[in-house]
Length: 455
Image (cartoon, rainbow, N blue to C red; front, side, top):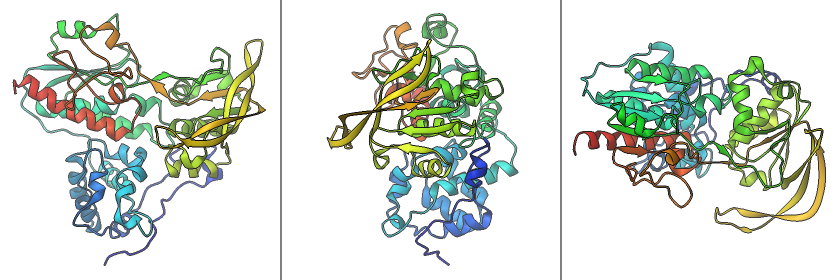
């Protein structure tokens, strides 16, 4: 029987006053009964707009129908025919702007919990099946993948499944890219990412960490070492701080550096993170929300400031709701303009009150300064106002063109201007979602196969 409830089945989660003191995953996941009940809310539309809203075109009605029947193994097969990372995407994709944003049930109520169901299926499968990979006939050709984030993982996995010998080169000492260093465990547990890494290894992918591709080891060196094609998926992780904020002060962090410290070095945190009393986070995206929630869990009084209103903030709606629930202050229409310090150590931030003007190129109303200022005392400032492209690969390799924004220029298939070099994900588009990066990696794998096969 169909479930015609206007609301999703609530996601079980830790209580706010418990979870804001630990780094365990907040959302606990559906039970089988909840998943089946939620799946029965799907209308199985003849023209499923939800599929068009998914960057990798998961066959959403088909997998949900399998869940409704309790056929979870089959549901997993449907999802993974197009999505390599369902346990990750189910947790971190902005479904409200993608698949769920197109759901017909959302017209007169809440959309079907597509992301929650995807996560349930992936977790259910992982709990019952060990990591494994089918044996494939090897092609005897080597491909290098630069970066082990979602684009690199997807590209490497698909190429390995086609029979290529794939090596991933990761500049950090941990594999997973932004999935590991940039997303807190209370949102995306390391164990989920680790399973995807182990799956790659089971497919025969070699992962070399602590090895940046730059002037010391370049794309040219990889070709000389026998790699016949190269995929560049090194992301876009260069901080872009607002003018006026002194990033040289002790206590001022880029969000990338702050989250890397918390996610990878939680047991040996720098004293000015571990002992911070008042933390101010600047930004309105998922990275800002992640950072301020980390600071709260480390025991600091926390404030997140955003120059627009929260209605315009790009962060996921459920993550913003969790932020409010966790006793974190959010100040809208607030823009930090300068820092106060003593002996090179941050002591506070000067902020300007903003109002919303006419829409800008993003379609959102532009924040306009009022000339009214106020001070906020703090000993940590985390800047989460965006990142830009790394030039480590393109500036040490001849023949790879950039686009007018500074990203790697590619065609729709992921080909760059240099034969044999392909690119995708944030290195091409700038910061985007995990699933869009993954889709770019999968497209590049198809293009690399065609290139190496002479098609």
